[in-house]
Length: 229
Image 1 (cartoon, one colour):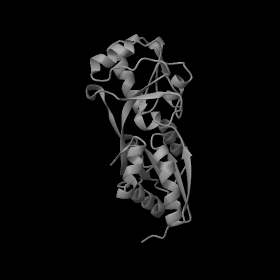
Image 2 (cartoon, rainbow, N blue to C red):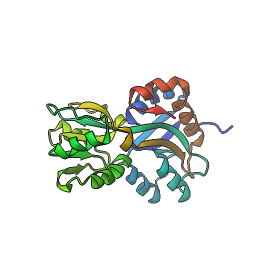
Image 3 (cartoon, rainbow, N blue to C red):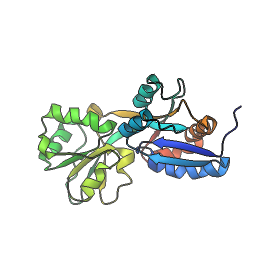
Image 4 (cartoon, rainbow, N blue to C red):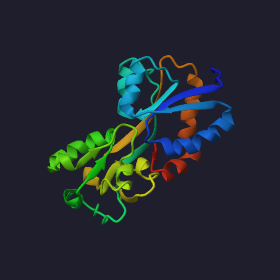
């Protein structure tokens, strides 16, 4: 078995950050491996890898991991599914709580809102299509840049409704989390890890994915809005 190096370089998208930040210090104590993490938007991760960045482990949406494997940037067969997340809705202080019981009731709330914020990650790409299908005016939509939570726009009072992965809405202060989208319009995104083809410490990367997917980590994932894989 390959021996683990003392440092593990990870590049990760934001969706799993809160659970990850709680889990990694325990992993470091148990393995004596120092984990150095770069938090980067999903699209930016791909750009950096294509430009020559070579972290040991990459964490992002499963579909994006698969694409990077096809490009030859991540090792074939290295994908490990860590957790899944659904899209949620949060509101600005003082905003009436929307009815999330059906697609129709949510669409009504969206049409009545003056301003709506949504992310540029996997949930945002999907929601852009939903909003277009519903006929939502583009001038009432604010799409946040990569790495910037949609909930922060609502917290500043610049949007009444904010849409993003539940795991990314929960840590934002100054907003009220309402709940997940109705089943008719829900999207489940799986977040996975993949090993870089040039990883210097692939063994530690595999150890970290085993740790995150272990039974002992499940409660932490759920507490931060993620469902264990």
